[in-house]
Image (cartoon, rainbow, N blue to C red; front, side):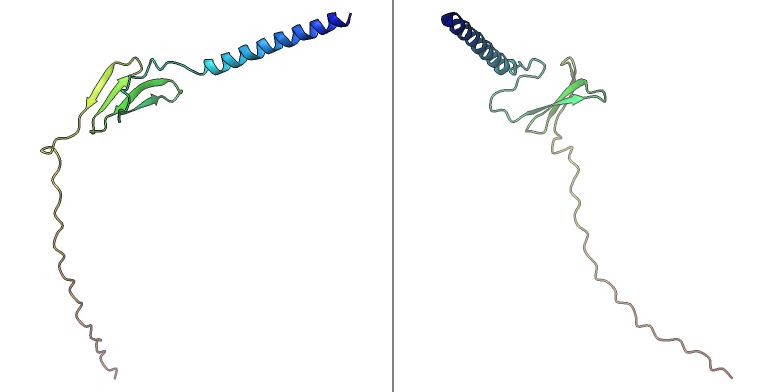
Length: 119
């Protein structure tokens, strides 16, 4: 009778160990999700992709910034809305040259007004 109880405990421990191992594998493997909706970036790329979200928390598009100053705006389906390019030097507004500082004029000395003598 002792062997039957010992056997059932051993079986129960085996089942629990298998369950715990399966749970651990599912928990670790379930966190990996493929990033299908984001444009693929090359390894070592300096471009950055940001997810755009509307007021309700739904994804409304992506913005990809290029290190050279360009950007791409895509909608939630991944369709290109607009591609922004950096300005060329001819389009850049010229720098303003600082105006020469003129010396500040000193105020003329104020002379007190003479009041007419009362008679």
